[in-house]
Length: 159
Ligand SMILES: [Zn+2]
Ligand SMILES: [Zn+2]
Ligand SMILES: [Zn+2]
Image (cartoon, rainbow, N blue to C red; front, top):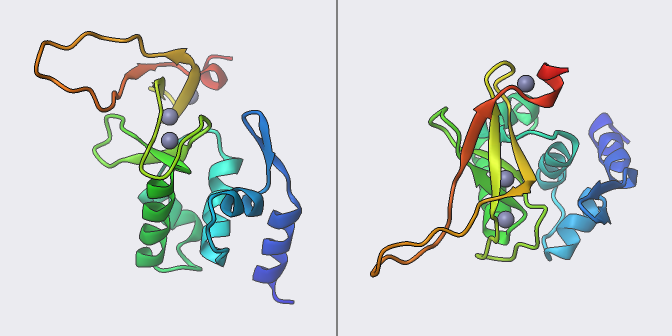
């Protein structure tokens, strides 16, 4: 067994609770009917482990020596399409991504939580307990999704 295989095995054994569900990276991929690949497992483990949104470049920094950019990009695309991760837009110009803790489905994200960017550490978090209120649009407009970003100091930096 080489080091990568060992890493993979420890990820597999590592159960993480996502919201109310208790899922391993493997279980999560399986529940979305996704084939297990080393890159998918490693990327999903990262999303489970960190509690802030990750950009493409920060993912490349973490797993870029094992997988090329195209593989990482495709993995993100797949997770996004399946409803495993969602886009988090902050003021940095490039999108970040975070785990969907609500019941999201293929091509159907159901988010109404806000995102919070910390001005001190620069990390952006999902705050699922704060819900974006329903806003009334003028006639003729059709609502699809909302991105609400609040900025300030996060609870770690504020401690
Ligand atoms: Zn989602
Ligand atoms: Zn902070
Ligand atoms: Zn979010």
